[in-house]
Picture 1 (tube, helix red, strand yellow):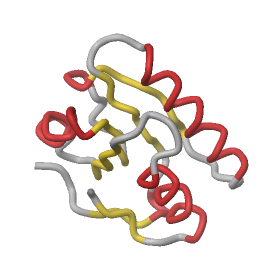
Picture 2 (cartoon, helix red, strand yellow):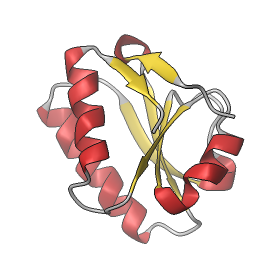
Picture 3 (cartoon, one colour):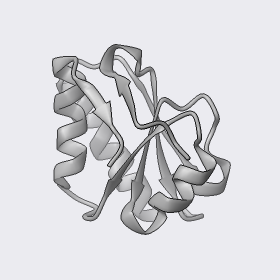
Length: 107
């Protein structure tokens, strides 16, 4: 199972897990990049098929339908699940927590 939390200061790499393709995940990734840049965060953000999540990912963001699989694959990462592809509160909370130096918790 994945990690339960990580301190914001330790987050260097965020992976957006997708099913296989790149359609909706690219939209979410780009939105996440814009929000992170606006917040002045210095983190790497990329996407990956859920079965190929890099083991050095600090945080994995995955749609609720893929979150269970992401937790199995990304055992060294905190997994944040979201429901809506645009403007999901879980993604906004992640950016806020990173900006404020809070603990990032799996959801």
